[in-house]
Amino acid sequence: MSAAATVRAAGNDIQLSGTLTREDFRSLTRQLGFAASYFPLAPAAPLGILGLDAGVEATSVKIAKNSSFWQRAFRDGNPPSYLAIPRLHLQKGLPFDLDIGASYTSVPSTNISIIGGEIKWAILGGGAVMPAVAVRISGTKLFGGSQVHLETYSADLSISKGFLFLVPYAGVGQVLVNSRTDSAAIRAVNGADFRETENLTKGFVGLKIAPPVLPLSFVAEADFSTVTAYSLRINISF
Image 1 (tube, rainbow, N blue to C red):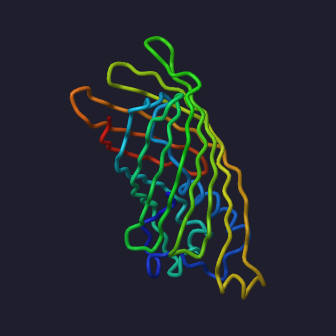
Image 2 (image 1 turned 120 degrees about the horizontal axis):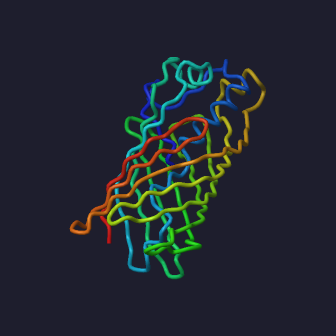
């Protein structure tokens, strides 16, 4: 999940201040939840029953580091300007224009990890003239190294059209974020942990480059919601 961040807090993990308010936690949930959500980094067109993309990617998410909710999310009050999210990402084609995928993040210098999964169905497989259109459902979960427990569930609709070895794509979707604190400081001040559920609208655009003479492909994507995320990916493709 990718919700990961290369953070500079104590122990480099999220340590919530007792001064964090419920409104702060709501705002934190919206930004951290989007950063932790599943980024497709793939066109709408199906991979095909023999198709496979296995790669590494990196996502940079610019956050509102000067806001009270980010400063109170770190013990030293000094959040980073960007959340840096490295990720392993695998997508496999199945029959009936279905693809499945999984991702894994282990955040450097933290105990935070994020796992994610997806299933995508190409309503239209695309061709020489027609674009491909697909629907996708996905989810992520954050583990360890954080006083925030967080899960995301997403659904999106995307379209893509290939031109030689270039495949631009775009899509829109919804992200449901469930979060809660696990902080003695929060419980001491408020009597209980905070819980939030937020529904976010997102859009994304991307470009896949698949040179025909190489078993490699490259993807660049931008995702837009409460914050903006920029991602690059390199795959071994079959």
